[in-house]
Image (cartoon, rainbow, N blue to C red; front, side, top):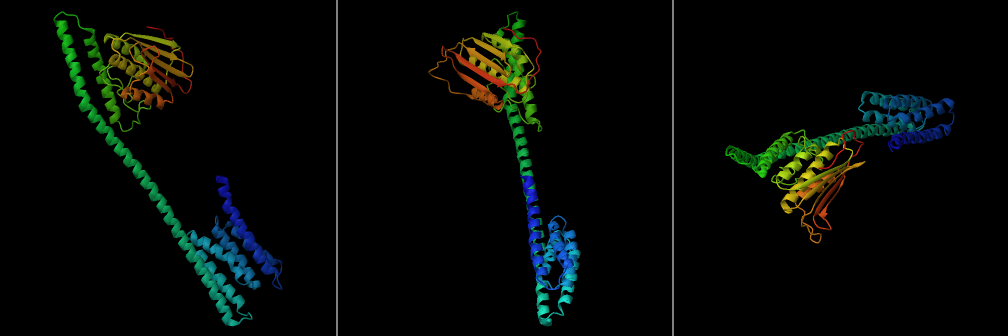
Length: 411
């Protein structure tokens, strides 16, 4: 398409030159006493118009010289001025003034001198000369108007681009301000409460040990989970305060709450070390909170893309949180399958979910779907036919990943 658009002006200029050459050739051949020199001058002056866009000064010089020869030798009339008029228009449009003015004066002077001895008399000659002067003035004015209009359009485009850039900068600034506001809200609403939970759990553990009593596993789980929640919350706040952070592609929304077995069931942001390498700690905390969990890892373990690794961990975390909250007394089975081109994560529980009454999706399930959709994966979260609930996420791995880690097993 670009090549066609590039050739179109050249074809138009060639057509103009051909029409002009045909017109002047007809004038020369129809005038008695003309020769090869006159025809050559007419053709050369016409063909110079091929360059009137790309090299207007060249077109003006060649066209004027040839038309001066033709006018001095043949009374060609107004058609002899056409190539000069087009070249004057082109040079004035590109910002030149002196060259087109000199060419116009010289051509008009030669034309007037050549036509004075004509049969029409001085009055007719002056009328013809006045007409030519008007044409040249009109060509200069039209070229000036065209030049100013083009400059206006370019300035309008520049201002539009500047306005667009300003709008983008304003949008980025507003986004940054919103990130800071969210960071402040999270800090004020969550950090204080989680800190109190951690301190109170620590005091209870200390008093129990001081009295020589056994520390309840649930209390230890609360202490550990609150510590993890504080670390992830701080990392999330750092991400929100960083203006250069573009967001977590695997986490477009919120998922879960900080009260489940995973500490914070989806704190968001690109929190460090939130991947399947932390699956063991997550499962142990769930077990210490009274949730029986088994884990099966199949396939060859490998290094995963960070967003896939993070999304898989968060999905398991949220699923175990939901089992703990909504299926009291149930057991959960986590399965991680390292398939060829995708990672499959499935969490099943044997709770009392009824296939005939599917649950209303909450924030946690919506967060899972958003994570999986951001990775172009597939998610199934629904009651099982025999009772209980299943969460199955199939996450594409994209480009081939590096294998070589020890194979997984079951626990």
